Amino acid sequence: MLVALAVGLLIGVDRERRKGEGGARGYAGLRTFALAGLIGGGVGLLGQPLLTAVAGLMIGAAVLTGYLLGERRDPGLTTEVAFFATFLLGVIAANRPVLAGEAGVVVAALLAWRTPLHHLVRESLSEQELLDGLSFAIAALVVLPLLPDRAVDPWGLINPFLFWRPVVVLMGLSALGYVALRLAGARYGLLVAGLAGGLISSTATIAAMAGRARGDARLVPSAAAGGVASMLSSLAYLCALVAAARPQLMIILAVPMAAGGLGILVYSALLARRSVGALEERVDPGRAFNLKVALTFVVLVTLFTMLARGLDLWLGEAGILAGAALTGLVDAHAAAVSMGALALSGAASDRAAATGVLLGLSTNMLVKAPTAFVLGGRAYGVRVSLGAAVLLAGLWAGAVLQGGGFGL
Image (cartoon, rainbow, N blue to C red):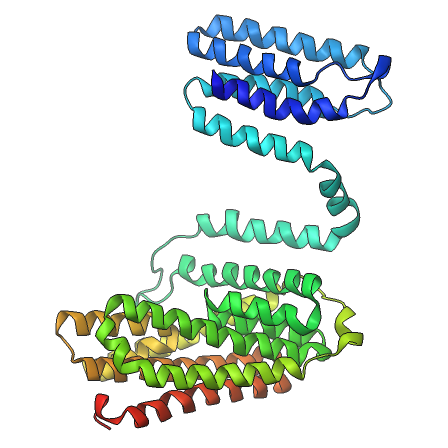
């Protein structure tokens, strides 16, 4: 009952502020909404369907009467719908108080954010952005759940669910870059989006930034800075995974990871500094995502997966390092975690596992470079490939400096 009352009061606060004063004021305010919540909570506790139905009809009749007798200069139904929602949430509170409280907060927020929401939909949100948002929702919530999560070919390579999921991730990352570009401008927006995207997938982020670079040549430096920055955040994430799987392994890798991370940090900062100036920060952000770029990215990932599988079948069990290199073609994080697990179980020494992590990172760069060139063009591809080279040079130079830990 306290939750039902709280929901009514919370929603009623907004309605009280908006109902106005005098003879033209709205019919329902703080007290009326609180009572509606209590009525819903009471019939919900009694648990008698007939009584609940009668109470619901009475609430509906009150809503209809208020609508017919109220001031009709505003033809909206917000107060009427909110009034019935308050009663319904009161009923739900009898058995699911937490759910009712959460839903009540959401309803109150929707009512309180009326002005910014209207401004967003009517002025800030374009029709193309709405269509792109719906396209993303269809790809993520309709197409993806319907795809079979199993291999559909005799070789066990083509899993529709696993191959469509990167499309959804890439669309989401591209949309993240679009929002960052609009909010923070071309100089820093894509850099921030790249850092965030690298925690999900550096390769997908590079592909998403490639779409930005392809769409507007002025954005090539900023997009490249974002793509390179994604390598930095992805490297940090990989270090966290390795430390969690095998802390001793991370001790061996400390110098190579620090050298590679420092190099890519400096390079991405230089790219960001040379990106578009203040006059060009008002460039058109374009589309939220490019479906053609997303599909091309999936084709590239499929080809690399098939290549890795073919090499695996050809070489057989050629060793842990070959396996790490093959896994790195698809996912450097997976290669690093597998190396940590092997070292933890004793199947591989820490030195061999550390070398395997570096090999996985190295082969993963072989995916990023062609992805950047194919999807983003020559200018973008050169910048990103140079970033990958800087990262690899730092990693292996660090390994040479470490020396004894790798047996080099």
